[in-house]
Image (cartoon, rainbow, N blue to C red):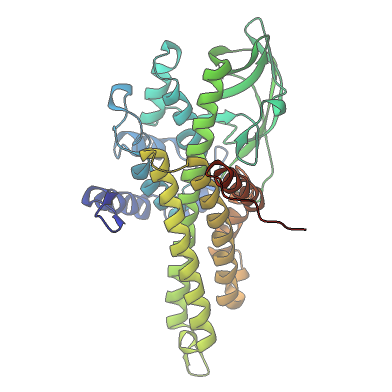
Length: 380
């Protein structure tokens, strides 16, 4: 995005990127393919995933060139995330692109992850992030996996994309919490509402692991991953909400009732207008969060909290309104609205709920007010 002095606008390169990803998804990941993949054993097509990395190069846009990436920014990656959300792209998007890759970038320089990072960017391997969070933030107290003599023991009960090739795992060590790389572990797939985004319980029983970082370095990498994942998840939610808005408006223009399109009725117009406001508000907060992380000009935790609270609720409300405005067909298995509603509900529970993020926003705003000497307001 570029600063024109009065507003931020997408650059021509970002607009070209959006068109390329949108066209790829329309041609290679239409609804029929998404439905087939979500019912498959793996939940995605490794060949298509490799094309996203190798042919389009969109799995490592925010990875520096010296580490095998494109050398772009997080806003570029958010553009891709939005289009992925619009197409309900099945596969390890959040686990690999949103969480594992940012963690490895934060640890750039360690030999143990250089080859892995390149393979993730190229789309030849996938990864998941087995690190528990509290409201989208890292809390060492939640880590129950333990490390001893280079092996891990314990369980992480819910890991997004937990069936991926490799895992980045937080584990307790003699000196605190470390981040480890694991190639093999027992994965137990979970039955979840959203079949396009797989989750699994991961169990370790003296499982060999390679140390990536410990102490402050591990916490820095984990925090970077959780922040980036939250920003990209917000952009993905915007994409899904926009797709539902577009389909609802199109449907309202063709569905006849009492001899006229339902979109001509004032009540339907108002609902569509409300949906538009929700989507545009969500888009503003999502890209502000990506910009805040990329540019460092705002408090990233505050920007991410606002984005997550806003986008989670906007996506759910737009998806629910889509189902209702489509009438009976919107409730059926044959219609895509229920797929987006399930994604919206699931996404709202990942990396912190809207309520948890609002609490965090209040804390951060209060801290800022105290820091600048704003007097407290009496409430009693």
